Image (cartoon, rainbow, N blue to C red; front, side, top):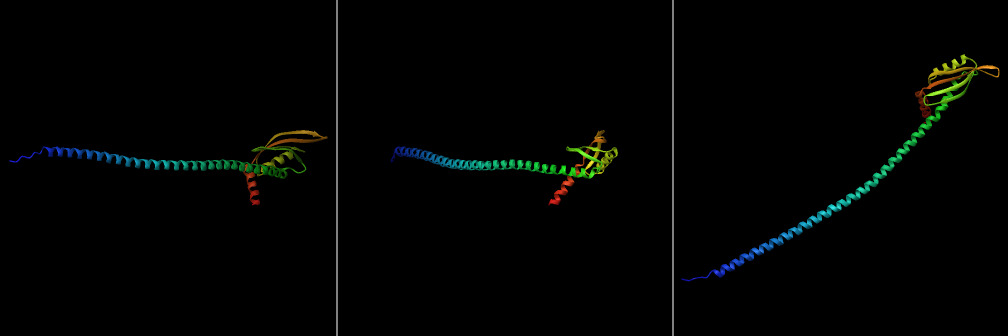
Length: 195
């Protein structure tokens, strides 16, 4: 019978198996290293994209912040302009009120019987001081004020007799309430006439 020695073949096969396993292990290491490198490159590219996006957004934020600051400055300027326009409007309305009151006084005074010596106006009242020849004239003047559309009420504050150059006269002080609506209506009529 023939005997074949298989020991060297088995040893060679074992070496071959070890070599294959080491090769597979090394190839796995190379594959893992390549995969990790590729993943790192992808992550780095994503990081660069995100950083570029962050930089772009920061630039937009600065741009919009500058525009927002401009808008805030414009709003402040508009508020100041509105205040100035309101002040001008108030001054314009207050400028016409004394003229209207003086015009009303010329119509309400009893001619050749009395004289207005003092006229002071406030927000809602008018103080009128004057001189008249008699009580009847003062009463007529107060009736004229009550019947006027510019005033809504009248109150006699003082009535005194005085002698001036041997003539007895009456000095009086009257407090009248302004009818704000009527004065504003007159102002609006004046403005509409100008337009």
